[in-house]
Amino acid sequence: MEKVLSARELFQALKAELKKNKSLQETYHHHKPWTDYIKKLTETIIGKEKVSREYYRLDSLKYEYTDFYKEYGDVKRKYFDGGKYLSVHNWRNVYTIEYENSAKDWTDELVKLSHLRSEMKVIITYSEWEGGKDEYLALIEKKVAFAVELLKNCQELALQDKWLLVFGPCGASGRDVYDKDLAEHFVGYEMQGGRFVKID
Image (tube, rainbow, N blue to C red; front, side):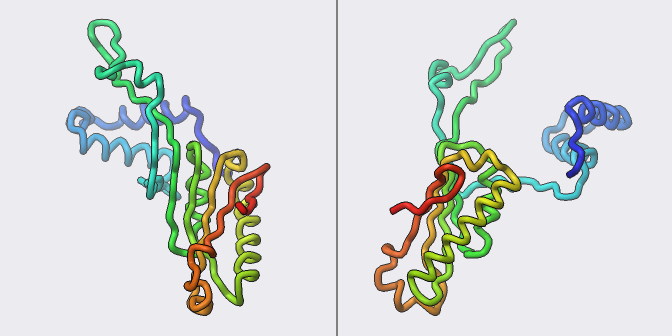
C-alpha cells in the first residue's frame, strides 16, 4: 500500500514548493489561476497516478440542515473579534443514491458510496434474467455476496451502514417473461449484520 504523507509532511512539502515559486503573488490573488496552480502543485506532491477530480458526483443526494445550523437563524454566521466571521455550513447527508444501467458495473457505485457518510446508501441497478426467476434470484444472491467481499477489502466500516440495493431484470432472452409483470421482478436487499439480505 502507498505511504500516505502525514499532515506535517504534506504541509512542509507544500511550503517548500511554494517558496520555489518566485512569482507566486502574480497567481495568488486571482481565484481561478490560483486554484489551478495549487491543485496541480498538490497533486504533484501526492503523486499524479490514480488522482481523480470530481469522482464523487452523485446521481441524487438528499441532505438535511442540522439543528445547530437552524440556531443561527437568517444570518448563518459565527462572528469573531472585530466583526470577522465564518459562514455556518452544517448539514448531514440523508440519502446518497446512484443509478447504474450496467448489470456489470454497479460495483463501482458500491465502492464510491462506501467511502461516503449518509443515513442511507442506495444503488438502483439491474441483473441478467437468463433461464427464469429462480436463476435470476440465484445470480443476484451471488452478486450481493461478492459485494460484501468488495466492501470488506476497501472500506469495511461500510458493512455497518444502512444500504438498499435494488435490482431490476435485464436481458433480451427473458424479456417476454419479465415484461408481463416487470415491477414484480424488482428485488431489494438491505444490509443486516454485515451482509445483504433480501427484503421480502
